[in-house]
Picture (tube, rainbow, N blue to C red):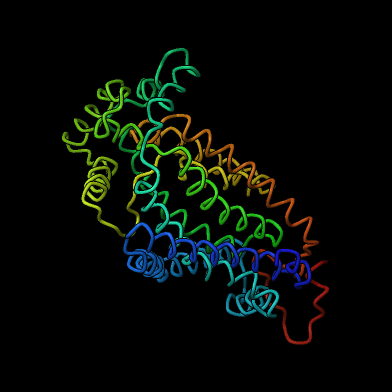
Length: 370
């Protein structure tokens, strides 16, 4: 089956691999869910519905992005340029597969991931927190990660800003999927989505299965020895929240743990700290932007660092959770590149990545290259 991917044309090679990931993960989720006794269909289709519910907002943001690009580039005929751009992206089955395929497959992949994640504690009880909590002090000269971050960013306002960035990660996730499908260079797009899909499954499910942990914010609830080291952190976060700064992290930590102890299931629920998928996906943006413009590279690094700091600062993760997320995604990125080379992947075409001005009727298209 895998070897058969090499016989498919262009974009179909990696899209078929991504579809195979989503299919196998979905089948596994339904089989494992029936075995464990969780409402698999409710979780799986609930995820899909939740993802599609944000499509109108994402479509509006993409339209606004296009309008801004046209304005900056002073495109005289935006509608004609849009038709040309869409023809580049979906004008043939090969091109359409690379553009629309990953957008359609992501809800299925996330549904499978969300289902598998929420059954992990039933098959792999939490037991790694004490070990993971001790790695940070080994790397930071005896200090816990949160002690370092609160030394530099400990004010209520700085904490609230980190909290909003961390919450905004989900919006960036949805935007990244659509914008990269539409605007990224073909090879970069293929490597991104292969890494994206493999990351959720290999890191978010497989690795989490072997290193089950709840993270600092929940460690006291499972009776870990390390919980005492994080009690001052959680007290500080709750005090900042009570002072009127409204930390989304404090709110969601309560929601997640209540769902965990009452065996409630649904979109974005489930407790699993190691490795941090927030950090893994944020580092994927860094890898994908490595050959982009300097401003985009800088922005991706700043976002990834803010998520790494925030994950520790807000009590979600131990420092090692984020570092393993980065390292794991780097390995997956390398593996995705190796797969594309093995498959003999060639992009559908050298697609235009920005709107091009429409030419008058009868004009020579070569004028664009002049």
